[in-house]
Image 1: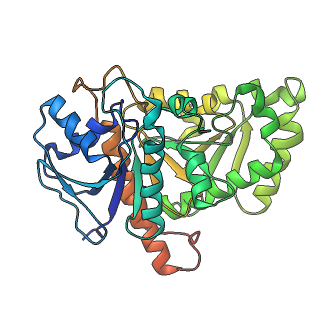
Image 2 (image 1 turned 90 degrees about the vertical axis):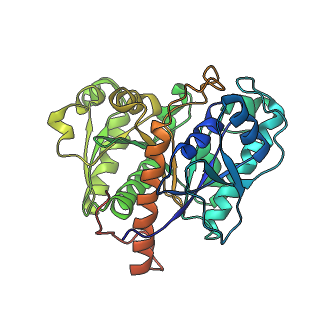
Length: 347
C-alpha cells in the first residue's frame, strides 16, 4: 500500500488560471491528498463564475484532506484584494507571496510532505515594488539554501539548468566553476534521492555553438566547463560533455542519458516543452522540501473561461507525491543525511 502524503497546492496569480485549475481537482473523487493554499473567497468567486459545484472545507494541520467529488480542502490565506479573472492587480502581490510562504513553512514544519505551485505572474509582483525572479529563487531564500536547481521533466526527458532567470548577456559570467560544480552535484544527488537512479548519467551542453569549436567560437568550454567536468568525473559523477546543444537532444545521446544539464533557460527548455508541453512538470532540486509546479504560465486570456487544461497540474501532483514518498524512504534509512542514495524505483 502506498504511503499517504499530504501536498500543499498554491493557487498562484488570482487573475490567472491557477484558481480554476485547483477547483478542477474536485471534479471527481481522487486518491491524492491535496490542500489548496489560497484565499477561500477567491476560490468561491471563481467557482461561481464557472458554474462549478464545489464545497470548500477549511483545513488545519492534523486534518485529513477531503478527496470526494465536489469537495476541496482549503488552507485560507487572507489579503487577496481583487478577485477578477484576467485582470492583474499589483495589490494582490503580497498575498501571492504569502501563499508560497505558508505552504513552504508547512513543509518545513512537517504539516505537508511537499508543495505544488500553480503559476504566478513575475511582472505584476515586480511592478508592486517587490523584487521577484521566480518561485525557484524565492523558495531558495525562504529555505535558506545556497543553491537550488531548476529541472523540468516529462516521462521521456529531464532538463536541468545551470542558470535560470538571467538576461542572456549575463549568462557567460554566471557560469563559474563553483556554480557549475554546485549545480551538477545537486542534480546528481537528487536524481538518486528522488528518482532512484543509482549512478545518473548526465549530458552537459556547451554554452557556445558547437560547444565552442575548440575555443574558436568562445572560450567558456575550454576555460571553465571542461576543467570542471573533469574534476566532477574524478569524484565519480558521470558527466558527459560539453556537447553541442544542437545535437545532444537526439536519440543517439538521449537514449542512455538520465538528464541533460543546459547552461541557460532557453537553451534546454524549448526542446523539452516542444516535446511535452502540457504534461511536463517543473521541479526544484536542492531544497530541503519537495516542490513541483506546472510547466505553463498564468494564461490570463483563458482565466474565467473554463477552457484551462489541468493536465500539467495533475502531473505535478503525481510527481510531487512520488518524490515525497522517496524522500520519506530516504529519511527513514538515513535520517541525518537527506542526500543518501534511494534505491526505490521512481514510478
